[in-house]
Length: 116
Image (tube, rainbow, N blue to C red):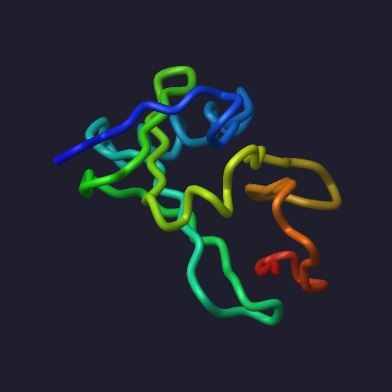
Protein backbone atom coordinates (compact mmCIF):
# COMPACT_ATOMS: atom_id res chain seq x y z
CA UNK A 1 0.00 0.00 0.00
CA UNK A 2 1.39 3.37 -1.02
CA UNK A 3 0.28 6.42 0.92
CA UNK A 4 1.49 9.83 -0.19
CA UNK A 5 1.67 12.91 2.03
CA UNK A 6 0.52 16.16 0.49
CA UNK A 7 1.42 19.71 1.40
CA UNK A 8 -1.15 22.44 1.88
CA UNK A 9 -0.26 24.01 -1.47
CA UNK A 10 -0.95 20.82 -3.43
CA UNK A 11 -3.79 19.14 -1.56
CA UNK A 12 -6.93 19.87 0.37
CA UNK A 13 -6.90 22.57 3.01
CA UNK A 14 -8.86 21.81 6.19
CA UNK A 15 -9.50 24.92 8.27
CA UNK A 16 -9.00 24.85 12.02
CA UNK A 17 -12.79 25.16 12.48
CA UNK A 18 -13.41 22.13 10.28
CA UNK A 19 -10.66 20.17 12.02
CA UNK A 20 -12.19 20.98 15.42
CA UNK A 21 -15.62 19.80 14.24
CA UNK A 22 -14.16 16.56 12.84
CA UNK A 23 -12.35 15.95 16.14
CA UNK A 24 -15.57 16.55 18.09
CA UNK A 25 -17.52 14.14 15.85
CA UNK A 26 -14.84 11.46 16.25
CA UNK A 27 -14.83 11.93 20.03
CA UNK A 28 -18.62 11.51 20.06
CA UNK A 29 -18.17 8.25 18.14
CA UNK A 30 -15.46 7.13 20.55
CA UNK A 31 -13.14 6.42 17.62
CA UNK A 32 -9.64 7.68 17.05
CA UNK A 33 -8.81 5.28 14.20
CA UNK A 34 -10.90 7.02 11.55
CA UNK A 35 -9.91 9.58 8.94
CA UNK A 36 -12.06 12.08 7.08
CA UNK A 37 -12.27 10.82 3.51
CA UNK A 38 -13.11 13.38 0.85
CA UNK A 39 -13.99 12.06 -2.59
CA UNK A 40 -15.56 13.13 -5.85
CA UNK A 41 -18.13 10.84 -7.47
CA UNK A 42 -20.25 11.14 -10.62
CA UNK A 43 -23.72 12.50 -9.93
CA UNK A 44 -25.63 15.53 -8.83
CA UNK A 45 -27.09 18.32 -10.94
CA UNK A 46 -23.73 19.50 -12.30
CA UNK A 47 -22.02 16.17 -12.97
CA UNK A 48 -19.77 15.60 -9.93
CA UNK A 49 -20.71 15.27 -6.28
CA UNK A 50 -18.61 15.66 -3.13
CA UNK A 51 -18.56 12.89 -0.55
CA UNK A 52 -17.30 13.41 3.00
CA UNK A 53 -17.33 10.47 5.37
CA UNK A 54 -15.28 8.77 8.06
CA UNK A 55 -13.20 5.85 6.87
CA UNK A 56 -10.84 3.41 8.56
CA UNK A 57 -9.30 2.23 5.28
CA UNK A 58 -6.19 3.47 3.50
CA UNK A 59 -6.23 2.40 -0.13
CA UNK A 60 -3.32 2.20 -2.52
CA UNK A 61 -2.61 5.61 -3.97
CA UNK A 62 -4.43 7.49 -1.19
CA UNK A 63 -3.16 10.94 -0.36
CA UNK A 64 -3.10 11.55 3.40
CA UNK A 65 -2.72 14.94 5.10
CA UNK A 66 -2.73 15.86 8.79
CA UNK A 67 -4.49 18.97 10.14
CA UNK A 68 -4.51 19.65 13.88
CA UNK A 69 -4.47 15.92 14.61
CA UNK A 70 -7.10 15.05 11.99
CA UNK A 71 -6.23 12.75 9.09
CA UNK A 72 -7.73 13.73 5.74
CA UNK A 73 -7.66 11.09 3.00
CA UNK A 74 -8.32 11.53 -0.72
CA UNK A 75 -8.19 8.82 -3.35
CA UNK A 76 -5.91 9.37 -6.33
CA UNK A 77 -8.82 9.74 -8.78
CA UNK A 78 -10.47 12.51 -6.74
CA UNK A 79 -7.26 14.37 -5.89
CA UNK A 80 -6.98 16.41 -9.12
CA UNK A 81 -10.57 17.67 -8.69
CA UNK A 82 -9.89 18.69 -5.07
CA UNK A 83 -6.38 20.16 -5.29
CA UNK A 84 -6.42 23.52 -3.50
CA UNK A 85 -9.98 23.08 -2.19
CA UNK A 86 -10.68 24.49 1.27
CA UNK A 87 -12.96 22.55 3.62
CA UNK A 88 -14.51 24.67 6.36
CA UNK A 89 -17.25 24.23 8.94
CA UNK A 90 -19.89 26.93 9.26
CA UNK A 91 -22.12 27.32 12.29
CA UNK A 92 -24.16 30.47 11.85
CA UNK A 93 -27.82 31.41 11.99
CA UNK A 94 -27.94 31.05 8.19
CA UNK A 95 -25.89 27.92 7.67
CA UNK A 96 -24.55 24.92 9.52
CA UNK A 97 -22.33 22.25 8.04
CA UNK A 98 -19.19 21.63 6.08
CA UNK A 99 -18.50 23.84 3.08
CA UNK A 100 -16.11 23.27 0.19
CA UNK A 101 -14.52 26.16 -1.66
CA UNK A 102 -13.05 24.50 -4.74
CA UNK A 103 -11.00 26.56 -7.22
CA UNK A 104 -11.29 23.70 -9.76
CA UNK A 105 -15.09 23.94 -9.99
CA UNK A 106 -16.15 25.72 -13.16
CA UNK A 107 -19.77 25.82 -12.04
CA UNK A 108 -21.99 24.41 -9.32
CA UNK A 109 -25.66 23.77 -8.76
CA UNK A 110 -27.87 25.90 -6.56
CA UNK A 111 -27.81 23.37 -3.71
CA UNK A 112 -24.00 23.45 -3.63
CA UNK A 113 -23.68 19.65 -3.48
CA UNK A 114 -22.36 19.15 -6.97
CA UNK A 115 -20.05 20.88 -9.43
CA UNK A 116 -18.59 20.72 -12.93
